[in-house]
Picture (cartoon, rainbow, N blue to C red):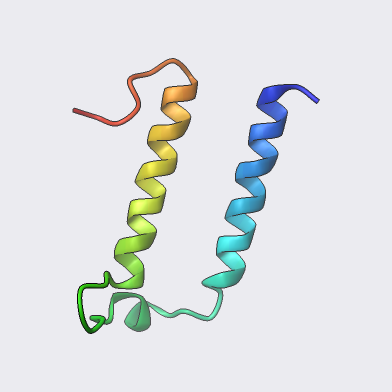
Length: 67
């Protein structure tokens, strides 16, 4: 198995795991404020998506995160 195939499979598995974890979370729960210094689920999800995008862009030879 080559590196690209391996990384694609890893990202696919991570996305499937996340989808299963969030399957029963509706928009109201995702955006609900959390006591203390924690982020709502939606903010954490957005952070994950932007991080994954930067990771993949970096692997493709891009600059990763926008500046």
